[in-house]
Image (tube, rainbow, N blue to C red; front, side):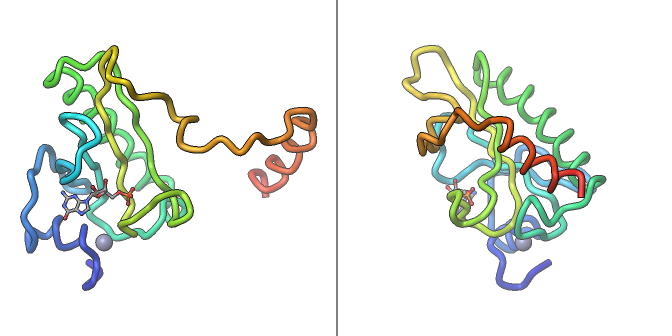
Length: 141
Ligand code: 5GP
Ligand code: ZN
């Protein structure tokens, strides 16, 4: 628990929320400003500011819970699919610095788009080999 963290306070019950799922490691609740009906946030009970601060086991547990919640939310709201994702860091739109997975149910004709509609910087596509090398070096470090 981090004293000043909004989601730590929600998870501990100090601030009320609309809970939809919980287990030993994870707490899931409705987003107060939903992007679509049923928009749910799935958060680890442990405080991590960023996704990249988490370890393998915590990530596995979080994403298994996110998968369960996604399947349930799709059924509950007769959604045909959903967007599932994390804003990792302020520059990427993260407003609350406690890791959470957004589960946003989607329906045909809802006017929404896919994950690439978040940002489109028109990067060079002619140097994919070099880009992959750069990535690989860091990923395999
Ligand atoms: P982020 O931008 O950090 O990825 O997402 C934070 C989300 O938390 C936003 O979608 C926002 O609507 C939601 N949110 C902000 N404050 C509260 C709150 O007090 N309660 C709940 N349930 N959701 C909140
Ligand atoms: Zn927190």
